[in-house]
Image (cartoon, rainbow, N blue to C red; front, side, top):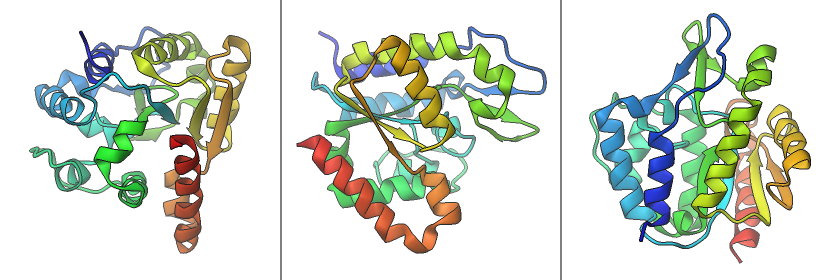
Length: 226
């Protein structure tokens, strides 16, 4: 019998763009790397080796210094090694969103407890760059239109992995929440979407209030975890 981790890993390995990509936009496809496959096999065997359901936490799309390198959402190479205990040869640089997320994880009780309750993914699980910089799917009008069917397919597949459908957390209270909410109204994936400020926004623009944001995140997670 397959586990939650087996199904999640199979989903991620299969990710390929089946939509038209506008000019000057590139896709991040970390699972084309054998090391990414290897570290993710370890990650999912270590933290998802069961059939328990989990609440989804959906970011925007993978970034080039986090999941775009490691394949593990909101996890840069440093957190992969130091926080999750998974050695790797990726270039060791930190990523702002990952810094915040792992403060949340540590305060929640650590990776083992956190990942037993939650599964982090993205509204669009393929990331994008333009001119060598991260691109959010909603920053390009044509790209945003083109990914709708792909996002529908990915959410459908991930729910089948073993996600709770009563509530989902959306990281990003603006464009990401609006897009997901509109899609959810049409397809009824989740009963309720809970938006939270995106970690990048917090670390870049609200760092002085980080304790308040951590408290907000933790209260939300604790309530959902029961």
